[in-house]
Image (cartoon, rainbow, N blue to C red; front, side):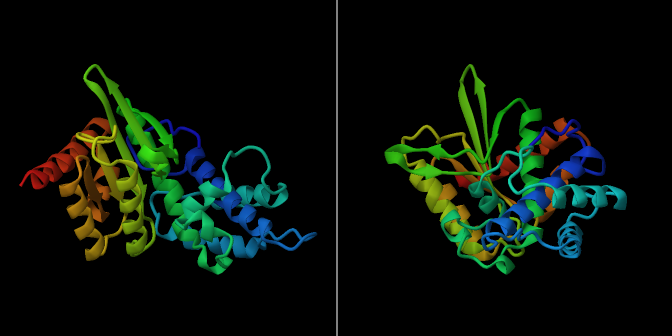
Length: 273
């Protein structure tokens, strides 16, 4: 996805919202087209896509907002393009990740189980969080597959590294954009990073695993976050609803960084007790 030029505010209007909506619509139409019988287009009707846009943008009101004319232009461009046309580089694995479903289950799930609101929120917050870390000087990779000891793979939604004279600091971020966040997915991601980063691995002390949702995690997930943070050298830090909103509405990049530092410091104090 393209960089967003101004990191001081949430995305409102302009080309950034256009690009996020276009990526959302292309992911939707490509997913439908891929499952269509041979010889059929498979793309949803324009009215269906409009309903998806309305549903998906409802929970991002004030963040992703477009004039009707822009929405019409993006819809027309999306419907007139061939499936998987050049312009956006993404894979089926990325689309499954944006829908927050395992890739090996993606093809078997009915289209009605793939929620457009989750897809758009995930694309939006992945772009937003990646921008923040870029502003703070990190090297950022969205959706980077990381290989740990004994070949254990881990794929955070955002992976950020900060090389310094004193070593490299790492931050892995997983987004949970369904409401409420899926507890089983949260537990599965904890198992995945535990296998990727056992004791003595490069991802360890001073490194962070951020689990981020615009909503609230259920108690079982929150309990496991705390337990894993206590037991592992890295810290697991949950950023939920109000805290995420505070970061979004920070006055500028530096105040946003300071606010996140406060969250990390508070988690570190809890980890030390």
